[in-house]
Image (cartoon, rainbow, N blue to C red; front, side, top):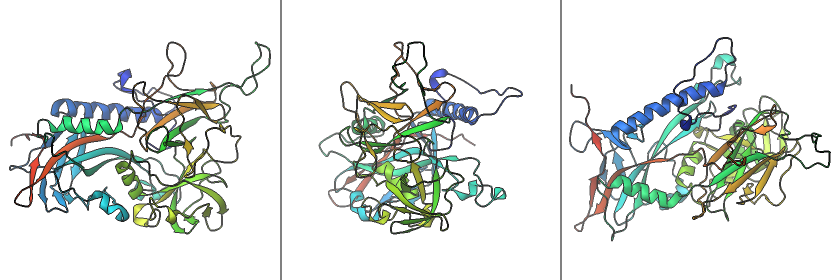
Length: 464
């Protein structure tokens, strides 16, 4: 979640059931957000325990209810309106077809990648949560605070996508009883195991006496920060890249127009800390690019990052080192206002404060840093991270996977779990977490046409 948070504290292993306020105390965003997370975790766990990992409210007749694949003409299929619960997450559908689904945003230049196979295939649902800011949903902003005044909160949105996978004609075609485990196994083969990351603050070496405190020891930044380390290019350790932000990726500026290398913005930021400087690394994203990233999460293709070369404060515009419309992965990004385009700042190339990048890390042609496993990589101000793989299998880095690292000035250290030996413990990514539900199997008939086999597990509604 790329919001302006102080830290993310919810941990189901702590078994906390509520956050209780005390009189006369300071209110913190992390505590309010943890209460929301506790309640949401409880409700979704309860729904999954009662209904199972995937369940669909039954409709009035056979083959009805939410997300029922009711027609397939060889080039498209439709699903019925209704609801589904995927790992306890409520998904609601108003009825749509594959090519018009609300969060599909298929790239016209890659439409052939989504053409249906001639043999049998499974239709399934991919569910995940996306953070939405006032840039992407303007109605969140209270205009009484000013048209360009500060935003107050952000939202999370449940995103579902209709997907399909080709089936082996020689293998057993899954039915309603076996489809869920079959789908989990297939997805697991694509994405497991997930990578690990550790974080620490390394004190600078000093020749001082043992009792002397080294100058600028520990975390050397001037402010408390929530760092974000995010996978940019997916794949194995040999091909994967990452980017990082000291503001949890929350510095975003709405894009008004893209004219070659010049990008006109609605604002250049509220202040220097949350604005742009020359040599900053940025990316351009919109609703379409966010949705397409879920589809191509494990692919080695990814959009470019850009470097700010000029800033025109009078026109509220920046000049980038490359033309965004020349990006072969997403040439239309930022050009459709209805998709709420924005410019997001990353800090692995920012100028200004003293940097301590490891020269051996390197920045590749797309503007991101190479992932190297088993070594500590310096970010800045003494903060270091270390990527680690699985002992038996090489991890699959998935685009969008991220870790957040709180650092505090008062302790000069990171808030990161440590093992009995005092070393930082490697952690799995905090997200993005995808959930899956089988919907149907489509099989061709010898006589022509197709047979659609419903795989949804219904549960009865309360009788009137």
